[in-house]
Every structure is written in structure tokens, then in C-alpha cells.
Length: 211
Image 1: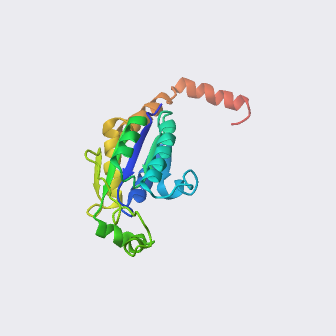
Image 2: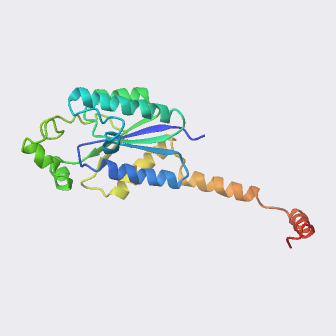
Image 3: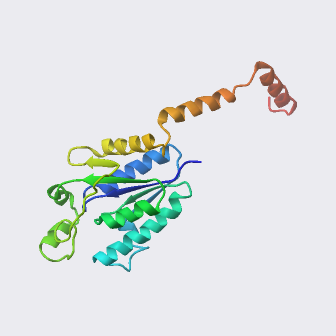
């Protein structure tokens, strides 16, 4: 059974958390692993749509997400969580509560995040139309010791994906491709029939009228 884990992508709005997390999810699914995605925009449309963006509501938002990740990760699912999650205390609590927690800091300067902001949220925040916006008038507390640091202003999405995958392999939460290949080769060797067995199978198929 695959070990469950919680991979927590945190960073400023528009830093690229969702993009990298989605790429990691695709690779893990390609390896036939059990994967679930919890993304900020999607979760706020359902599980936490009653919450706003005050510190209290943001903490409650992360608390609920942590509970879901806890249930999934302890049952052998790789949970990829992508939230701004600006406060260290909330992220530290997620680390304590979930299985095999891996913090991924998606680091990007505010100027780069603003350039990527297709929704114009930073512009609205600077104009006072959005209050308590992380990176403008609300702080972001950077991780002190993340398992993975991604400098996305200098590294492409695919390379960031590979960095995360390598760390998960290193920690033993994801089997390395070499291990998967060895397992497949072993299965293929086990499925090789002797000549005598093949002749018996062929005679049986002939008796049944298939040959």
C-alpha cells in the first residue's frame, strides 16, 4: 500500500502554486498512485464558501482543509494542497495533524505575482477595493524550513514539478521510476511460461475450438 502524504504548496497569490501542484498530480497519477487535489479557489466554492478573508476566517479555512487532508493522507492518499495559507501557525498545525507532511514554498517576488495576476486582484487591493489582501495590506509569513523551496521566477513549472517529485521519492512517499521499472520487469518475468506450459495451453485452446 502506498504511504499517504500531505504536500502543502504555500506562497503569495499568483505565485504559481496551482500550476505546479497540478503538474505534480498528473505525474503521480501517471505512476498509478492515489492522488487528491485541494485547491484554494475550488475549496472556497464549496467547503469554505461561508468564510471571508479575515485572519480568523483564513485560519478556519485552513483548519477545515487540514481536517480533510488528515483523513485522506492517513488512508494512503497523496494529498496535494495549494493555498496561500499565509500564517505559519496554521501551517504548523497542518504539519502536526496530517500524515507525512511536506511543505513546498512557492517563492516569487510580489512584482512577479502581480504580472501573473490575470484577475487584477493586486491592482484592486492597491486601490483599496479588496481589503486584507496577502502581499499588499496583509502579511505573508514565509516558511522557515520548508522541505522544498521553489524559486518560480527563475525556474519553469516542469522543473519545479521534477524538484517536488524528487523530494517525495527521497522521502519514500513516492516510488522512484527505477523501482517501478524493476517491479514491472519482475512481473513480466513471473508471467513467462515454459514451452511445456505453452503447449498445454495451446492444446486446451484447440480442444475448446479457439484455435
